[in-house]
Structure formats: structure tokens, C-alpha cells
Length: 134
Image (cartoon, rainbow, N blue to C red):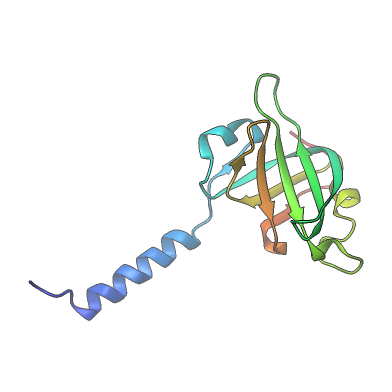
């Protein structure tokens, strides 16, 4: 059996890293169902924020609910854990993101009732503007 040359191996790994590091497609909340478990950036207006306590998931959770069209499933960005504490990178995210256009990057999952996109690092979420725009 013929072995792969080290140079081909290095190029294969480098190509794989570049493909993964490339910017994911930007989609609206209404398009999420076609991208479940695929890396995407979802951009939309946050119309509702919700706080929940969860003993399993870092104690605290914030849900940022995007506006969506009638007939499509709701989409929520979920922020979990200690970063919500005072001084944490996501502190007051509910107040800063409410009624604003937000872009969040991750892998949407379906819960049956809605799609959720978990965020656990600051580069995954960006408040795009101070006034809601669609």
C-alpha cells in the first residue's frame, strides 16, 4: 500500500482548518430549519429576553428570542453559565440586546418547540446596531 507523503498530509490539514475557519453563512431566523447542526450566523431582531434558572446548565440561562415570520419556528440564542454574573462578558446582555439587531454564530439545535443556538464565548455574539432594523 502506498503511503501519503508528508507534504500532502500538511496541505490536507491546512485546507481543513481554512474551511472550518471560514465565515459561516449569514441567515435570518426564518431560515434556521434548513441549517440544524450546521455552523451559521443568525442575524435578527431580539424581540424578547427571558431568564431561567437551571440546576444542570451552569445555574443561569438567558434566552434572546428573535423575531420570526408566522408559520416558522421560533429561534432563541441561549447563553448559559457563569458569564452572566456581574462583571462577566455577558452581564446585562438582556438589556443590551433587547429590541436590537443581533448576530449569533453557532450550531442551531431543534428542541421540537423552537430552535436554539448556544453561545458561550464573546466572539459568537454581536449587537449590530442600537435600533431594530430588518
